[in-house]
Image (cartoon, rainbow, N blue to C red):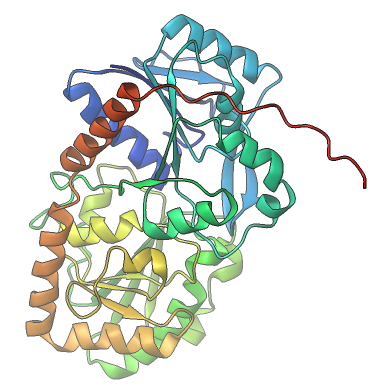
Length: 387
């Protein structure tokens, strides 16, 4: 198959969608398919990147409690038309298909006969823009030949506004990259209890609750506590606490790290903590920690419950509760038998999400779409007449 993947999130910008696009493209190529990634330009350099076409330029836009990548450009629709007509794809997959600009424009571009698959990633309780623009966005969604959601919360969120059939194909994990027995970061295995956080410092990630949990943890265990923060974000200066409030615990903010170095931070951790308050559709970082053999403490929210079974392969704590976060971390730090059990179960679960298996499911989905009759294009929207 000739496959085009449209995404506004891609390297060098980190993130869940970036990882999904990269790994599925790698595996689809390994399976013998010709894959082209169509994405935005993040800088002014025009270096050659085999299998990647960049158009427009990236800007950041606040949405869903985080900063979202949006592509700006005057002729984006024309460029998409040109790419699709030239490449003659069999399948075009667009990630976050109802998000401006590249994904949404893809739904209206000249596909030159390609079948169109939309993959929905977001999960939330409500979306104001979806409510306001529900009618035109539903029209856009009906232009898709097939809809995929990465989790049940993502499916429920999308179907609430845009009813239809959605196939659930989860995100995956590179279990060859994230695995136990990797060399830790030099100097971090010094006897302290290392709690690791990986992600953007956005409001929805819940870092203030983890900060409030640190002095409780420090009072509960004899070892010194160190929180390692990997990632950047717009709220970094706002959320970082004063050292005097940490009860002697230490915070080490390392910022964004190289992809090859990230597994070594997991290898340096005693506990991985994801205190997000909501609007998480899946949680790739949870699988990364599981694959690396690190016990997990995560918020008890729908997107994380898709990955973690509390008490079996991790511990889920009430979102926004420093006390429950502290209690879960303390239990892991104080009970090596329980920790070994949930770590082993987590590793087994991560292996079931390896990218090879996930991409085979995606490939089967694409072939099924090609075997089906093409969906008729929905009738153009008509103005609503006043009564």
